Length: 304
Image 1 (cartoon, one colour):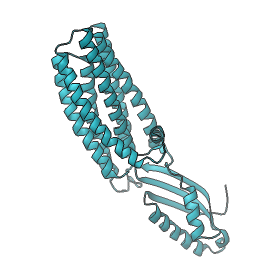
Image 2 (tube, one colour):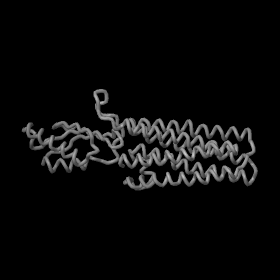
Image 3 (tube, rainbow, N blue to C red):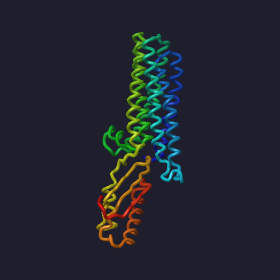
Image 4 (cartoon, helix red, strand yellow):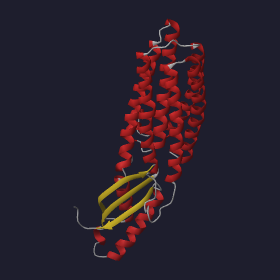
């Protein structure tokens, strides 16, 4: 996924969520709806989350320094994990608390049609944001099913936005159903239940997101298996040589570290020639796979 593509998706989502948050807060004040207030807090939380992702993207682009010899590409993973925690606390827990509070202390709603109208508009805005994100996901999904993409992608920023937008869209539908049932029946219990449902939804999404981003943060292998690809390239450049060990780590959205040992084969007795060939091999890897930012190669004749 290109950085430009993910940034565009984040900005679209940020603008949509800001407009939605303002309209929801106004609607919650007018109607007194718990589910509308829960959705307002959710949208405001999403705005903060998207700002953190943009901040993480900027930090991740900083070049290597003496203090950060491999660069700061994992910054985006860290801020994505922070977003998951905020989604859990500010979004899910608040919505659940507000719903339980209104179940214990129900209050009649004022002007429920105003809230319903706001939610209908919000569904349209959120649907536009979600569709823009989904198109980017579909463009870079080479894993097959959507669930496989969620489990295996290393595009942390796009994963966050996709799950946030999906949760926001379903949350809006929950709130719309809850507010409509409250308006039809005159029973505010449906509105409170809607807030609880939104809270549970956000907690589930937050847990899934935290689990997936944690794997990237602690050192996940890339979603592409480079072993066979590098083996084939090595054979064409160093006939008889072979890879005897390879470690690949995802260091960022578009940054991979690879360390490998190469058995020089027939060139084992000619160290200088073997080193020159390995250097040429590293250049070829860099050209063929620009996402591999760091390579550490070692000549060895042991297989262990």
